[in-house]
Length: 216
Image 1 (spheres, rainbow, N blue to C red):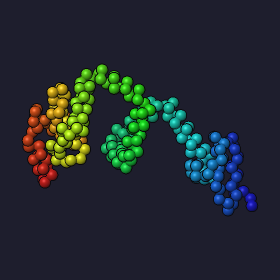
Image 2: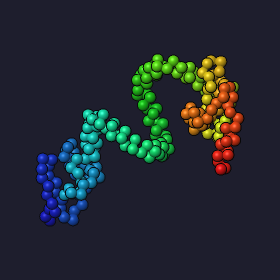
Image 3: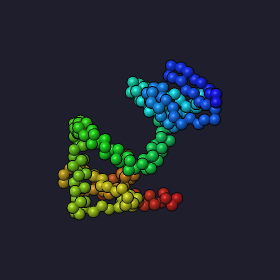
Image 4: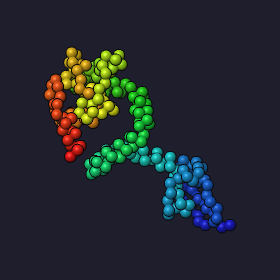
């Protein structure tokens, strides 16, 4: 049976016989023989596959990106700025679908880069003297909840009981346990200035306004 096509070059020779389905292919870069599924498709190639395997392609791309980091970052920023809502939505969808994998990845990063993270925390505390007070206030609330001396309440704004944590109006030691219970979403809105907290009590009509907005 004659060959259907014969391709010769610097990377080697590929021969494909008529009526015979190719199952393996020799990589032109690492010279390893691998299943054809390990090669990306290429319509203009005689066998329909690229000459380098997927691993070699990825290694070459990683090397190029490392050597051109500024250019890669600039292109990524440009794509994000062109449509930030699209990229945020994609990230949220991916994070929700891969929540456990994301948590494990973060834990692994913390383990493998513990000294680097500690140095980052030290530099952040040096730039923001209040950061240590904030961390101590959060730890005090967590310990109080574990002991049972402080009970987590529903969000003071929307009333949800999911992902609720304490918002401090003051991080001084005597006010560590004086918190407003807010969900993550409402906490972000408070920090962004959407809602106003009157110290030491919250504006009483926030929940009423939220309910009116839902029914309107």
